[in-house]
Length: 440
Image (cartoon, rainbow, N blue to C red; front, side):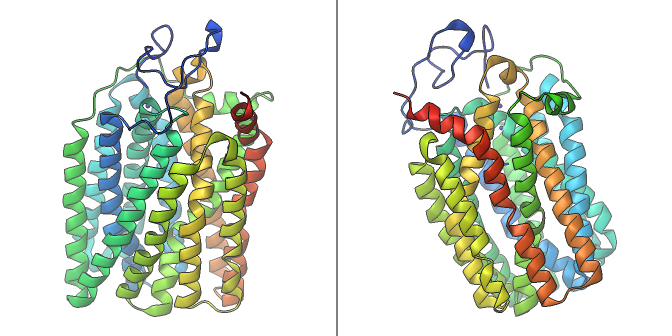
């Protein structure tokens, strides 16, 4: 997740009523902690609503954008280049937009991200069957939209959550994403199959455009948050040079997380279509796998606590590697569905602790909270470095061979990266949080 805070000491620490588990170490006092089952506040629920609308719009059409490009030009490397350009643009956008979010209006940045997402689908509609010829332009626009939206979203997310309710928020965010992924792609597949395919694609891209506009409208109900301080352009370099900081190992974990995301984010859905030749089958795949993910996020979001994050993340990472093994037997709809169900079941155990732990690290002390925008940019840059590396490896391999055995080993190798993430996180962030939670 792909967050933001209201006040911190003396004007950077939340008031006693607003505070939950934040601790200002300089005061020597520990603030009371709100029960983790306390209801989410109105602004938090509204942020989830905007997230849900964006997830629905992306699920409705995003699943089929790569299929649309594939049908125009059946080339794995073209899809890889489109994805690589997307991630490169997103990384640059995160870094440059950090100043906007830090010193100006972060809510306008969030709205701009949603608006540019709408522009992306407008461009796809304009390009029509020639969309593959404009894959560079489309990758740039999509990367800009993702960078603007997720930077602002993550800053606001940080501000409206705390260590006590962060796992719960992430569970709800995953729940909404899974719900959107369950219904929207099935509807898209049904419309594409039962209409002239060109008309079907135009319709779902148009609906996505409308949903993004609705998302912009809802974003105006989010409170404008006061800008504080000046943006430090090179905090990432300064931070990674410090040997004593936990961010060095956490950054390696984030890069490893991004490696899998960069490839699996587009490859699995594309494989389903390539092996079935049916948008409806792809819709059914998303319906089933997302239904499992929906239940898993619901349960994990309620049960996960600081003390069990480390074990849950290891189990989740291990299982999402093992579910790749059936591909060595045969890649077809059945084995892809086994993977989809397994990923839906176990991925929340990996992703929720990973996300929550990194944001807890940002909120560890007042200095890092003051520079929350820079640390969120650091997080996203590391993720995108991983995505770029993973996608680059995919392009190199796919350019030389797309033989089943080669592709299977490629996916398995890239799919093992969550275990690397767990290794680096367990060396620092997860271990410290577990020890802290175990203390009376």
